[in-house]
Length: 302
Ligand code: MLT
Image (cartoon, rainbow, N blue to C red):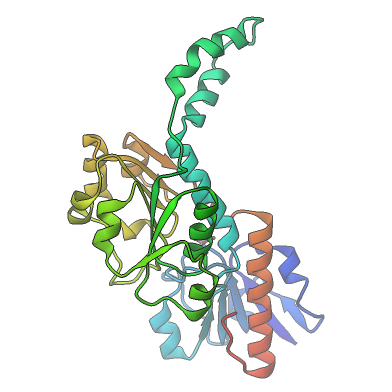
């Protein structure tokens, strides 16, 4: 019998993959393995029995990797399993930053539903006019599973796409549309692109990688999208640039007091991977990884 503990609610589609010899326990100290989504494990003490942690998601910054390595606890993540969900949020983010869909809907919600509402809307619509993303330049920093999907989708939407990744995998390169300019100079992205989206993991080397110096190189009116991790961006520098209009919009999945109170931000509550499909995919991958490790000693991050 193996015992697992779920630190966050995990999709039942995934948990159903556990055969009868696996039992869920509410008590982490009884568990052999832990499934976690976004719960912060840095403050938690890891019980002695736990030999593996599976993160149902891509980022592992909520897991104390060094301590796990010291204690021999194997950590898995589920790269690519939620890439489609995040890709769709990024495309939605670019559209929301370009068309005043939110403003139009909010305005209509505050109108009385009278006979004249259609006429009134026609008069008002000028105020919500926007621009198209087709024909504009998109810079993608990080061509992993998500970056590649965003790149390919953006090409289909008629964007000119610039991708940067010094460590692109064979798999990612294979899947990447041939129409993308794969460049090895971030400055080109900063100088050329109308939209810049970040898809790199949070590490010491990437912390605040977008700061005042990088923003200064960017085009006037650039849109920055961050569905990766908040600390990748120096948000104080960004808030200044938003106030000055240098950055037209900041679209992010990470709420905090500074970002939510700065004008021209579009903030969602970490919804990138919050789709049925992504949650199921992540849970299935995480459960399979744990079983393969516990039963066969295999360590596969796929
Ligand atoms: C991820 O790390 O996979 C995404 O941020 C989504 C999530 O954490 O749920």
